[in-house]
Length: 348
Image (tube, rainbow, N blue to C red; front, top):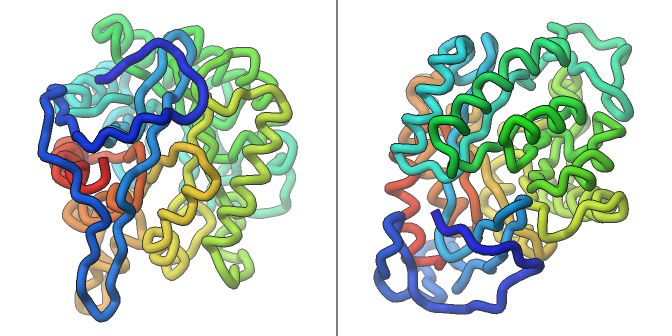
């Protein structure tokens, strides 16, 4: 992992060399590759380089793709719910993902799958009138994730731990336990204390775009241009976060594949992912095992189940890297890390 002293803003480094995960110099950059095809794709000549300040250190983003491995300490997550609910199993999975090539481990204790009624305040407050399975309490979320974060940091002190939460109190407790990044699927909007809390914690933050709440996703009105909508709202929410005191160099943006977007809306979001660079922030992409991957892989009229989405996931992640993603959040770290080594030859 490349770790540097904290710095602010976007780096002016435009080196044409790439680096593999052992830090060795790789092949020269391929500039402005254009694939000749009836629906040709232009690959950006260079991915922007940033120093992401996550508190006591910063991560260099853009020279190579960083991999964020997913550890869901939940019984009901769509991909591997229940498999890592026990502390020892979750810690073992986190260590395995680090060994497979992850630079960041994202630990979550609450599912935001479609239909879940999230608990919180502000824009997502309880009492929305929608029916669905209620999310877990704040205390239960803390009981799930804090032992995992603490043990991962004990066994791998240099590992970067991210906490996947939309609750300010959970974020604060997780950072105290060793997390350096808060990954909030609500874009810091559901808990009115989140923005001020992150400003005080001075940690890294991932601001994700979501349309509506999980219990509303199936009834959301269509968006005429999902990419324009995501760009506009991400810009507005990032501006609000910075006005609340969160430094720009601490933020990474995530367009939120699958979160309030139907099947058809995710494909243009992936195809036009590079347009989000207009916001001038580092970008994270999470397409791993999502439903739109399963729909694209459908056979005999049936979507591919979660267990059969690995190859499609790697293809989607490779596209995201070629379109300029700095961080890929994934369940299949080894496959993604290998794909990133090749894709980085093109974009880094």
